[in-house]
Image (cartoon, rainbow, N blue to C red; front, side):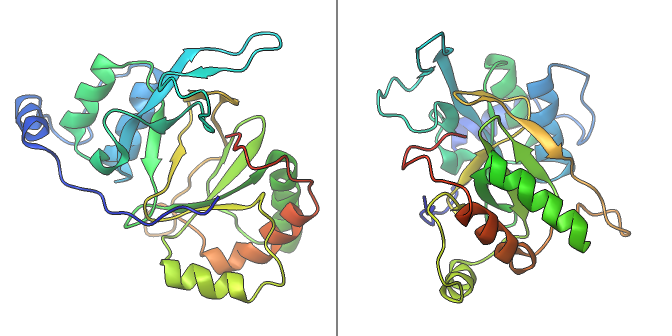
Length: 241
């Protein structure tokens, strides 16, 4: 899947009203659920815009697929996509994030990728594990990596669509199992329960010598991610995050 570029809009008037009502000092929040802490850490400490995910209406049982709260029988990422509000409402505003997860404490935490937030490349979990092993052998620092039982998502510095196009053009072939999440895209953050299982950190975010969250550049990882994805059979067009 190739993400379609988009623009995030500012908070609506009602959201701004709630923001003023529940305003607290940045970085000051009590210990809560894993999702609560993930959402607030991402938004306030890392300045990553987040929005609640659709969540699951029912979890998968034996021989049954998970049902997304969006009720779309063809939903390709059950529980792992924005629904209401939509992706364009993603924000770093602490008060808004508090309000969302106070009212929907079980909602997945969705990171809106691109812009000033990280972009991501996702690939099958088997290929992702092999890629991390290759990075370790060659001394390449991969940065934060998200994981579900079926897929890994590698976070990288924000990239422009034009930059991505040039890098992909230089490749002989890019397998469909390697997917890109740039401006207008999204990934679920740890603690989120999706149709593919619970999201976790395979590699947690780290800070550089200046205290900033460190993200690798796309071009330093792309060759290995393409190679390992190409060596892994694609499971089809249906996404399994």
